[in-house]
Image 1 (cartoon, rainbow, N blue to C red):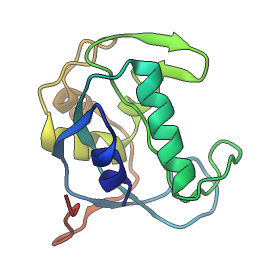
Image 2 (image 1 turned 180 degrees about the vertical axis):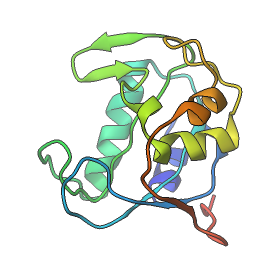
Image 3 (image 1 turned 135 degrees about the vertical axis):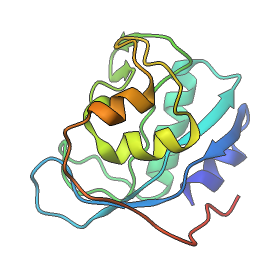
Image 4 (image 1 turned 30 degrees about the horizontal axis):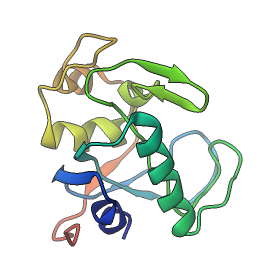
Length: 147
């Protein structure tokens, strides 16, 4: 549903979406497993307008402002914005923890293994190989994004 809403937004075009993955919770709080994917988009929006659009989609899907790490209905993160480094307000790009999370790197590697992290100067594939995260990430066979 989130991908469908993203695709309908003016100034946003979905280029690629990874498979969906069932992933073990990260962060130590007892909760249900997540479903994750990574999507590459093209946009004519500024980074702040894109961020606001994604936050609005989260709210439209029922997200409530909860404390960090607690269960939520939806969580849309901007991992990168081209190869820019951005820090301001609630927005830090590249996402500061993406290189430590298998649930991000595994689907990301599926669609863009050679993308170079602009701060760490390593490809997504290299980051995945070096990752020490032991959390389970299970590809959901036969599940399509519906776009």
